[in-house]
Amino acid sequence: MTHTLQGVDVADLVPSLGAQHSVAVTNNSTVDGRNAVLFQGSPSLPDNAVPLAWRARLSRPGTTVALEWTLDYCFVHGRQGNLHDGVDYGAAGILDARLARYNVAGLSYRAGNFGFRREIGEHPDGVLAVFQDDTVPGQGAYRRGCVGIGMDGAATFVAATEPGVDLTFDPHPEYWLTLARYAAGAVVDPGSTQAVRLTFPGGKTRAHAVFTGTTWTVDYR
Image (tube, rainbow, N blue to C red; front, side):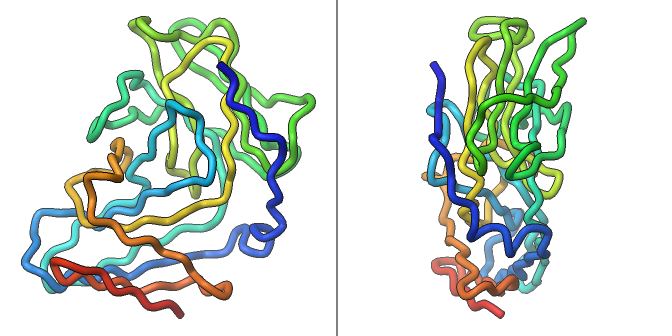
């Protein structure tokens, strides 16, 4: 099955491309042994795509940790084809992406390894797309992996590989923050977390989030 977007208006993203964002996370609770975890949501995802813990740092009670990133996109593939809550996607490859011209990647499987290539052809600007060819292992295959997109060098969404399936992603990020046991690269079940959305209003790029044990408060700078 092909997941297709007809084009995405990314004019609102252009001013932020390459800009550094950050969130300072203060743990004002007794919750220990958890990471401050950033994961992303999206306006449109392929049906079998899952979010990953994109940034994660240990957050001890009474401490503040910082999570930082820039708005730069990439394609990613991994070794894990059985994607379920908490499993690591198995980072294996990465390819730089842009919102035009370099916004499409092809995925192949040769000599026991996945590999990306640049794709040239008809595709809508603003969409990040992956074309999986017929060599890619699919459902039931021992060597099945995963493929998707990322930001600032780390994966944000992946889907299990399937031959002949084209995946298209809307690049508009929705940022979510939680305290959880997820390590960076692990599949996240958003419904199992007490997460707060980070909105960065008015072009602001810095946030301070405080967790009390029951609620989050966030202010922006």
